[in-house]
Amino acid sequence: MDLTDRPRRLRTDGVRPLVSETRLDAADLIAPVFIDATADERIPIDSMPGHERVPVAEAAERVREIRETGVAAVMVFGIPDGKDAEGTRAWADDGVVQRAVRRIVDRTDAYVITDVCLCEYTDHGHCGLLEEHAEESPELMIRNDATLELLERTAVSHAEAGADMVAPSGMIDGMVGALRGALDEAGYSRVPIMSYAAKYQSSFYGPFRDAADGAPAFGDRRHYQMDPSNRREALREARLDAEEGADVLMVKPALPYLDVVADLRREFDYPIAAYNVSGEYAMLHAAAEKGWLALEEVAYESLVSIKRAGADLILTYFAEDIADQL
Ligand code: PBG
Image (cartoon, rainbow, N blue to C red; front, side, top):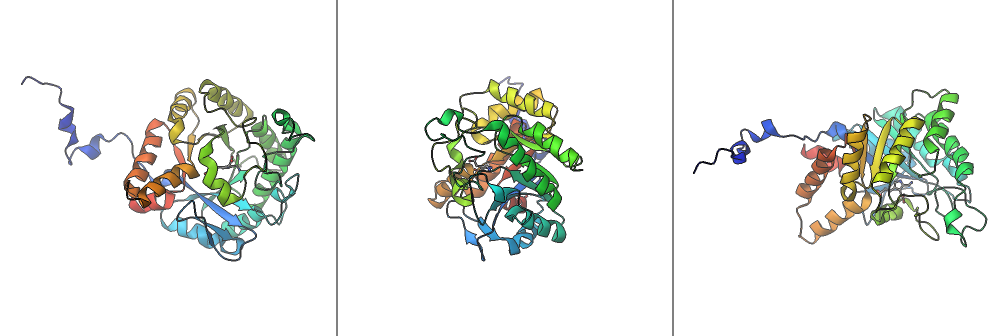
């Protein structure tokens, strides 16, 4: 045999780590946490095994558990004590995220990121203010520009509570520029914005909507979140957010959209984040429960693949388990 090129030479146990192109590190991971203003004890989330809605009083303790695994950053989601048409509990000084963030910042050294959106706070479950006849004409449904001011108040209130970074997830046009302006004006020019820049209208968010109680009461989000068919449009969204002052650009979901992660990595010199969403987590758990997949292995492979595609940071419900393994 005169085979000269033998890639298998580099696959011995001794050399594999030396030539490994991608490495996962606990420092790349962000762990989502759910804080529930209506709970007085932890409530397991059925569709997301291992995750719970945690009462405000236990917010810091929950984050300390995460810190112990080596994960340094958390993304805080809130389940409020009340909902209304405008989502006023989203920017209340005694709102669930504001109270939780104060406790976490006081009692831990975690890096605290907050999700800035209205869908968990509005009684209709959409991510902004609705037009009067929203149910009959869903295309015009959200009052884009009027929503911006509510998002500004929300982001500033998170920064006041001590959030290190804010992450607008509503796919409202102009949201990054609006937040940047409001944060700067309020004296928070040091607080970075991680934009959910290319957020697709995805059915993989299903378990999250149970967890955070944020399913739309009617219709869906296809008139503001991106069409899964579109790849080039993600570049346009990311470019706008970068121009408006985003510091980190996120793609969401992750695994079904790795082409988009790779595109953003190539086109932008910003940190790229990917959100390995609730459905991506739930489906591996469900298959593992049936004995069809080896959970630790598929979780690790998922996250390595997301990094290999070009993500610098990964938001994932596997954060603690994987960090423990590493
Ligand atoms: C909106 C928001 C959602 C998720 C994160 N932020 C839900 C949505 O857009 O419907 C989904 C996260 C996941 O599925 O893990 N506040």
